[in-house]
Length: 136
Image (cartoon, rainbow, N blue to C red):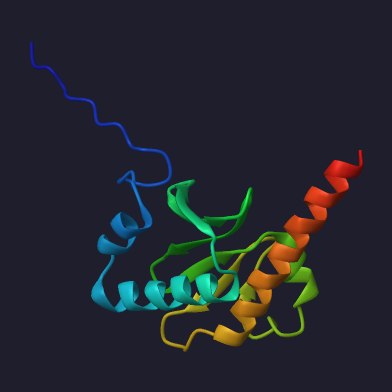
């Protein structure tokens, strides 16, 4: 009798990334360069963030994750949650967005100023959440 080897797919993709460096290293050179720009922008906007892999994507945290990003076929997905999508809706009109995601096409320059504002906004949101939690 012939045995069939089962293959299991890992959650959130075929590779389980161990670190942001590992995630970046798995990308093509041109995508890696864009991801590094985004990473530097996030750290410049809010210094001392902790990096980790969450949902198999790079994530940037204070106590809770502020933003994520992921390399896709034709764009980098930036995931700042719903608040910034609403707050910056006018500035985001030229980008494809959903409830908690923004698509930055690879063939366009990253909007560094806008990303900076979004990350700072997320930090303020998180600080407010923590303050409100302490009041209870």
